[in-house]
Image 1 (cartoon, helix red, strand yellow):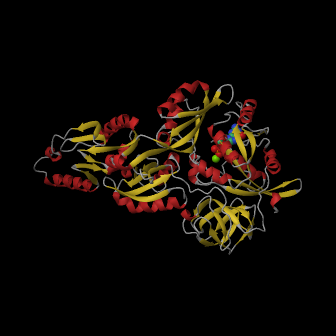
Image 2 (image 1 turned 90 degrees about the vertical axis):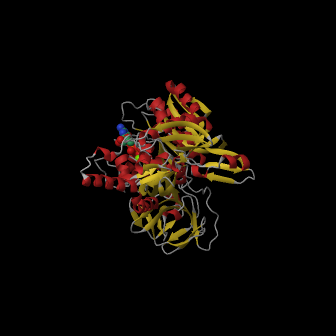
Image 3 (image 1 turned 60 degrees about the vertical axis):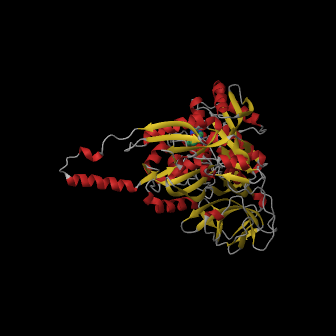
Length: 612
Ligand code: GDP
Ligand code: MG
């Protein structure tokens, strides 16, 4: 295939607007897969994905298609989105994306995209956000209205919404479900999206845009070949790390791995190259032949964790097992950062960094369900920035690292917190209530306007910390589920931050400290002592629970002592029963943590984290 017979494109859409269904239709139409009656999605491969509608890994596929007597190689590059439409994870609503980073990396492997919009739902927050991502990268965008078979489809209205985003092209009108007009899609892709540029005769250069771990083959990379040719046996090198690798296998995804002799400039395919861990496969990295000096491709930035949390086994005996499970899960997801953490209250555990709270919840759910691990996840924290008076900058990913009051007054010039730019779309009747919400979450309005007569598109700059708690749930409940939401990172801002500690009988519980904006301390402080009181059992002495900032007590609760010895109710004569009970208590104590004189089972922390 010469380059002008290749097209690299992706489908971008708001959740549930039909991306996976359309992708499957295109595979059928090109004979890449057999037509199926059961409507089961082929591209969403992982079981978790099928069951829950969560797309965990991008699926990329090459198709062959004939157009005016010419054969074309069409590479459909999926944009990974963690999402959930069927279940509530925990008590929270899901349906937002926290991976604009990964989406933009995938888009970098394409020259254009289909922007798919549900004709009944209209333009939503992720439609807007994805549109801007694609536009920023200079991609050709083909608007497509899907689900026109639905009675509620409002083709006219939605077409004008699409136009108001700034798209000149008339949208195609299709039903991915009934297959209506889907034959118009690929000709439009060929005619409107340009072929990849780059030269076969230049030195080899490729972009890594996805990777996963395969039990038999090891790390598999998806690469977009920008220049030159790659063959089996070639020695290549990461421009980012300098690491060298031997290419042992390569080929195209059709839809499964199909080995080929080489991959040429313009092609997209998989490469197996003796990488030992997925963490070596940095999305956005450039690869070149060993010894050749090439310019790195633009835009490399390591995946940035936006949310950190400590993870600890409920039963400390599970540490080893959990360690293995976390290793296995992170093999497939290089965007999770892992380091060991030790807590006096919770023992040995890990500090994990995620791209967002949904990412965190998906990871947690997989740990709990696939690996049957009982875990305690601490309050998530965002990366705060401490700027020292000398100009030295440190990122804080754990409240334990927060500077003390003394330290702060002596040597800290400024504390900063990460900000996001949030996009929201909703019917106008919710405007007041959602502006209140954003205001209460310390947001600042950036933009506001109408998408059509009744629907509003609003942008706010908000602290990330306010968004990763229950912002999305609130947004949903205040808008009867109608508001949609997306966010992207937006730098740092000076902030009045403090560390709140929890004390049990004057002894701090390290795992429960948390960094807060000063304005939230009262509310959170009161809430936490109440919730702790509910999960801590009475002991032989009084327990005082306090939340504090520095030396100042924010809130306090007391748990009165137990009145009698537990064994007192047993008859004096029944020694064996008494012994058994004492044995049992002893065994239970092994799993207890001592905070000062207060004994706490790990499960109390688990209960606290899960309580509301
Ligand atoms: P994704 O989240 O964008 O990948 O969306 P899916 O492809 O999973 O589709 C979401 C839901 O919409 C599924 O229940 C599909 O069966 C349904 N759907 C997709 N396309 C159409 C369509 O053209 N018409 C109708 N009526 N339903 C559709
Ligand atoms: Mg999907």
